[in-house]
Amino acid sequence: MRRPLIIANWKLHKGLEETKAYADRLKGALTDEPEYPNVDLAICPPFPLIHPLSEMLRESPVAVGAQNVSIRVEGAFTGEVGINQLKDTGAQIVILGHSERRNVFNETDDLIAEKLALVLTETNLTPVLCVGESLQVREKGEQAAFTTRQLESALHNVSDELAGRIVIAYEPIWAIGTGVNATPGDAQAMCKAIRQVFAARFGENAGSELRILYGGSIKPANWRDIFAGEDVDGGLVGGASLDATDFFALYQIALGS
Ligand code: PGA
Image 1: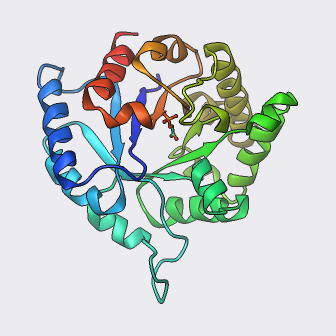
Image 2 (image 1 turned 135 degrees about the horizontal axis):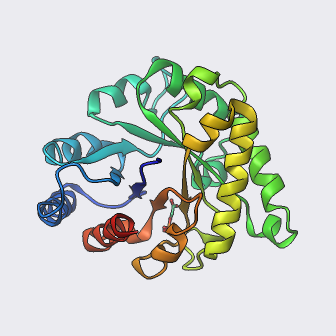
Image 3 (image 1 turned 45 degrees about the vertical axis):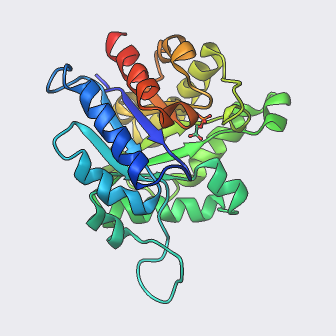
Protein backbone atom coordinates (compact mmCIF):
# COMPACT_ATOMS: atom_id res chain seq x y z
CA MET A 1 0.00 0.00 0.00
CA ARG A 2 1.32 3.40 -0.96
CA ARG A 3 0.96 6.05 1.73
CA PRO A 4 -0.62 9.19 0.33
CA LEU A 5 1.52 12.31 0.56
CA ILE A 6 0.43 15.93 0.30
CA ILE A 7 3.11 18.58 -0.04
CA ALA A 8 2.64 22.33 0.35
CA ASN A 9 4.87 24.28 -2.01
CA TRP A 10 4.88 27.81 -0.63
CA LYS A 11 7.11 29.11 -3.44
CA LEU A 12 8.25 32.67 -2.65
CA HIS A 13 5.61 33.41 -0.04
CA LYS A 14 5.36 34.08 3.69
CA GLY A 15 7.56 35.58 6.37
CA LEU A 16 8.34 34.39 9.87
CA GLU A 17 5.22 35.74 11.57
CA GLU A 18 2.88 34.29 8.95
CA THR A 19 4.71 30.99 9.19
CA LYS A 20 4.18 30.88 12.91
CA ALA A 21 0.48 31.65 12.59
CA TYR A 22 0.15 28.94 9.92
CA ALA A 23 1.99 26.34 12.00
CA ASP A 24 -0.18 27.11 15.04
CA ARG A 25 -3.31 26.77 12.97
CA LEU A 26 -2.25 23.52 11.35
CA LYS A 27 -1.12 22.00 14.65
CA GLY A 28 -4.42 23.06 16.21
CA ALA A 29 -6.35 21.35 13.42
CA LEU A 30 -4.22 18.22 13.70
CA THR A 31 -4.70 17.74 17.44
CA ASP A 32 -7.95 15.86 16.88
CA GLU A 33 -6.38 13.59 14.27
CA PRO A 34 -4.97 10.11 14.92
CA GLU A 35 -1.41 10.09 16.23
CA TYR A 36 -0.16 8.05 13.29
CA PRO A 37 -2.28 9.20 10.38
CA ASN A 38 -2.36 7.27 7.12
CA VAL A 39 -1.52 10.31 5.07
CA ASP A 40 1.87 12.05 5.04
CA LEU A 41 2.02 15.82 5.05
CA ALA A 42 4.95 18.10 4.25
CA ILE A 43 5.56 21.81 3.79
CA CYS A 44 8.28 23.31 1.61
CA PRO A 45 8.75 26.97 2.54
CA PRO A 46 11.48 29.32 1.25
CA PHE A 47 14.95 28.36 2.52
CA PRO A 48 15.22 30.74 5.53
CA LEU A 49 11.96 29.40 6.95
CA ILE A 50 12.85 25.71 6.79
CA HIS A 51 14.62 25.60 10.13
CA PRO A 52 12.15 27.72 12.13
CA LEU A 53 9.21 25.83 10.63
CA SER A 54 10.73 22.45 11.42
CA GLU A 55 11.17 23.62 15.03
CA MET A 56 7.57 24.82 15.15
CA LEU A 57 6.32 21.47 13.79
CA ARG A 58 8.68 19.31 15.83
CA GLU A 59 5.92 17.60 17.81
CA SER A 60 3.67 17.16 14.79
CA PRO A 61 3.60 14.55 12.01
CA VAL A 62 4.22 17.24 9.37
CA ALA A 63 7.59 17.08 7.60
CA VAL A 64 9.42 20.11 6.27
CA GLY A 65 11.40 20.34 3.06
CA ALA A 66 13.09 22.57 0.50
CA GLN A 67 11.93 23.71 -2.93
CA ASN A 68 15.33 23.28 -4.53
CA VAL A 69 18.98 22.59 -3.76
CA SER A 70 22.21 23.57 -5.45
CA ILE A 71 24.22 21.09 -7.48
CA ARG A 72 27.28 22.65 -5.77
CA VAL A 73 28.21 21.23 -2.41
CA GLU A 74 30.72 23.76 -1.13
CA GLY A 75 32.89 26.61 -2.36
CA ALA A 76 32.72 30.02 -3.98
CA PHE A 77 29.13 29.86 -5.23
CA THR A 78 27.47 33.05 -4.08
CA GLY A 79 23.77 32.75 -3.43
CA GLU A 80 23.56 28.96 -3.52
CA VAL A 81 22.20 26.62 -0.83
CA GLY A 82 23.72 23.15 -0.79
CA ILE A 83 22.92 19.72 0.57
CA ASN A 84 25.00 20.18 3.73
CA GLN A 85 23.10 23.30 4.73
CA LEU A 86 19.81 21.49 4.05
CA LYS A 87 20.78 18.58 6.27
CA ASP A 88 21.29 21.02 9.13
CA THR A 89 17.91 22.71 8.73
CA GLY A 90 15.70 19.77 9.59
CA ALA A 91 14.56 19.36 5.97
CA GLN A 92 13.39 15.85 5.14
CA ILE A 93 12.40 16.30 1.52
CA VAL A 94 13.50 18.38 -1.45
CA ILE A 95 11.57 19.31 -4.59
CA LEU A 96 13.66 18.98 -7.77
CA GLY A 97 12.97 20.15 -11.30
CA HIS A 98 9.85 22.21 -10.61
CA SER A 99 8.73 23.82 -13.87
CA GLU A 100 9.45 27.27 -12.42
CA ARG A 101 13.07 26.15 -11.87
CA ARG A 102 13.18 24.77 -15.41
CA ASN A 103 11.51 27.70 -17.15
CA VAL A 104 12.39 30.78 -15.10
CA PHE A 105 15.86 29.70 -13.96
CA ASN A 106 16.81 27.62 -16.99
CA GLU A 107 17.43 24.34 -15.18
CA THR A 108 18.04 21.67 -17.79
CA ASP A 109 17.18 17.97 -17.80
CA ASP A 110 20.88 17.20 -17.31
CA LEU A 111 21.19 19.46 -14.29
CA ILE A 112 18.09 17.97 -12.71
CA ALA A 113 19.42 14.45 -13.30
CA GLU A 114 22.65 15.45 -11.56
CA LYS A 115 20.79 16.98 -8.64
CA LEU A 116 18.66 13.88 -8.25
CA ALA A 117 21.73 11.66 -8.17
CA LEU A 118 23.44 13.97 -5.67
CA VAL A 119 20.46 14.01 -3.31
CA LEU A 120 20.09 10.22 -3.48
CA THR A 121 23.74 9.39 -2.97
CA GLU A 122 24.80 12.08 -0.49
CA THR A 123 21.74 12.68 1.68
CA ASN A 124 18.78 10.92 3.28
CA LEU A 125 16.35 13.47 1.87
CA THR A 126 13.35 12.33 -0.12
CA PRO A 127 13.59 13.86 -3.61
CA VAL A 128 10.32 14.92 -5.20
CA LEU A 129 11.03 15.02 -8.91
CA CYS A 130 8.67 17.21 -10.94
CA VAL A 131 7.80 16.49 -14.56
CA GLY A 132 5.06 17.73 -16.87
CA GLU A 133 4.28 19.21 -20.24
CA SER A 134 3.51 22.70 -21.53
CA LEU A 135 0.22 23.70 -23.13
CA GLN A 136 1.84 23.58 -26.57
CA VAL A 137 2.87 19.96 -26.03
CA ARG A 138 -0.56 19.06 -24.66
CA GLU A 139 -2.30 20.65 -27.65
CA LYS A 140 -0.26 18.42 -29.94
CA GLY A 141 -1.30 15.41 -27.87
CA GLU A 142 2.32 14.63 -27.03
CA GLN A 143 2.05 14.90 -23.24
CA ALA A 144 2.82 11.26 -22.47
CA ALA A 145 5.82 11.07 -24.81
CA PHE A 146 7.20 14.40 -23.56
CA THR A 147 6.75 13.68 -19.86
CA THR A 148 8.13 10.17 -19.97
CA ARG A 149 11.16 11.43 -21.89
CA GLN A 150 11.71 14.05 -19.19
CA LEU A 151 11.39 11.35 -16.57
CA GLU A 152 13.81 8.96 -18.27
CA SER A 153 16.34 11.73 -18.58
CA ALA A 154 16.11 12.58 -14.86
CA LEU A 155 16.42 8.91 -13.87
CA HIS A 156 19.43 8.38 -16.07
CA ASN A 157 21.98 8.13 -13.23
CA VAL A 158 19.78 6.45 -10.62
CA SER A 159 20.68 2.96 -9.39
CA ASP A 160 18.05 0.30 -8.61
CA GLU A 161 18.98 0.43 -4.92
CA LEU A 162 18.20 4.14 -4.57
CA ALA A 163 15.17 4.38 -6.86
CA GLY A 164 12.77 3.45 -4.05
CA ARG A 165 13.40 6.77 -2.30
CA ILE A 166 12.07 8.86 -5.17
CA VAL A 167 8.67 10.54 -5.26
CA ILE A 168 7.45 11.89 -8.60
CA ALA A 169 5.11 14.83 -9.11
CA TYR A 170 3.25 15.11 -12.39
CA GLU A 171 2.63 18.81 -12.86
CA PRO A 172 1.32 19.94 -16.24
CA ILE A 173 2.66 23.48 -16.66
CA TRP A 174 -0.61 24.79 -18.04
CA ALA A 175 -2.33 23.83 -14.77
CA ILE A 176 0.17 25.45 -12.40
CA GLY A 177 -1.19 28.59 -10.79
CA THR A 178 -3.77 29.02 -13.55
CA GLY A 179 -6.90 27.79 -11.82
CA VAL A 180 -7.27 25.22 -14.62
CA ASN A 181 -6.61 21.78 -13.16
CA ALA A 182 -6.12 18.62 -15.20
CA THR A 183 -9.27 16.54 -15.36
CA PRO A 184 -9.21 13.57 -12.98
CA GLY A 185 -9.01 11.32 -16.06
CA ASP A 186 -6.02 13.17 -17.50
CA ALA A 187 -4.20 13.23 -14.15
CA GLN A 188 -4.78 9.50 -13.71
CA ALA A 189 -3.69 8.66 -17.27
CA MET A 190 -0.42 10.56 -16.90
CA CYS A 191 0.35 9.16 -13.45
CA LYS A 192 -0.24 5.68 -14.84
CA ALA A 193 2.11 6.35 -17.77
CA ILE A 194 4.76 7.56 -15.33
CA ARG A 195 4.37 4.42 -13.21
CA GLN A 196 4.81 2.24 -16.29
CA VAL A 197 8.05 3.98 -17.24
CA PHE A 198 9.37 3.64 -13.71
CA ALA A 199 8.42 -0.05 -13.61
CA ALA A 200 10.09 -0.67 -16.96
CA ARG A 201 13.27 0.92 -15.64
CA PHE A 202 13.40 -0.43 -12.06
CA GLY A 203 11.06 -3.43 -12.04
CA GLU A 204 7.40 -4.10 -11.27
CA ASN A 205 7.83 -3.86 -7.50
CA ALA A 206 9.52 -0.50 -7.65
CA GLY A 207 6.80 0.66 -10.02
CA SER A 208 3.97 -0.41 -7.76
CA GLU A 209 5.60 1.17 -4.70
CA LEU A 210 6.40 4.50 -6.36
CA ARG A 211 4.43 7.44 -4.98
CA ILE A 212 3.17 9.75 -7.73
CA LEU A 213 1.66 13.12 -6.91
CA TYR A 214 -0.44 15.33 -9.10
CA GLY A 215 0.12 19.10 -8.99
CA GLY A 216 -1.58 22.03 -10.70
CA SER A 217 -4.44 24.15 -9.31
CA ILE A 218 -5.47 21.61 -6.68
CA LYS A 219 -8.24 23.01 -4.48
CA PRO A 220 -10.46 21.43 -1.85
CA ALA A 221 -13.28 21.57 -4.45
CA ASN A 222 -11.49 19.47 -7.10
CA TRP A 223 -9.21 17.34 -4.96
CA ARG A 224 -11.51 14.45 -4.11
CA ASP A 225 -12.06 13.55 -7.76
CA ILE A 226 -8.40 13.91 -8.74
CA PHE A 227 -7.16 11.96 -5.74
CA ALA A 228 -9.57 9.14 -6.57
CA GLY A 229 -7.32 8.17 -9.51
CA GLU A 230 -5.79 4.78 -8.88
CA ASP A 231 -2.27 5.97 -9.67
CA VAL A 232 -2.58 9.37 -7.98
CA ASP A 233 -0.97 9.01 -4.55
CA GLY A 234 -1.17 12.59 -3.39
CA GLY A 235 -0.66 16.19 -4.35
CA LEU A 236 1.90 18.94 -4.71
CA VAL A 237 -0.02 22.07 -3.87
CA GLY A 238 0.93 25.70 -4.48
CA GLY A 239 -1.76 28.36 -4.11
CA ALA A 240 -4.20 26.36 -1.98
CA SER A 241 -1.43 25.39 0.43
CA LEU A 242 -0.88 28.99 1.51
CA ASP A 243 -4.01 28.85 3.62
CA ALA A 244 -3.69 26.41 6.53
CA THR A 245 -7.43 25.72 6.49
CA ASP A 246 -7.43 24.76 2.80
CA PHE A 247 -4.30 22.64 3.22
CA PHE A 248 -5.88 20.83 6.14
CA ALA A 249 -9.05 20.31 4.08
CA LEU A 250 -6.97 18.59 1.36
CA TYR A 251 -5.46 16.34 4.01
CA GLN A 252 -8.87 15.41 5.37
CA ILE A 253 -10.18 14.57 1.92
CA ALA A 254 -7.20 12.24 1.41
CA LEU A 255 -7.77 10.65 4.82
CA GLY A 256 -11.40 9.99 3.99
CA SER A 257 -10.89 8.48 0.56
P1 PGA B 1 -0.60 25.55 -7.86
O1 PGA B 1 0.97 25.19 -7.88
O2 PGA B 1 -1.25 24.59 -6.89
O3 PGA B 1 -0.65 26.99 -7.37
O4 PGA B 1 -1.10 25.39 -9.23
C1 PGA B 1 1.41 23.86 -7.88
C2 PGA B 1 2.92 23.83 -7.95
O5 PGA B 1 3.51 24.65 -8.64
O6 PGA B 1 3.56 22.97 -7.33
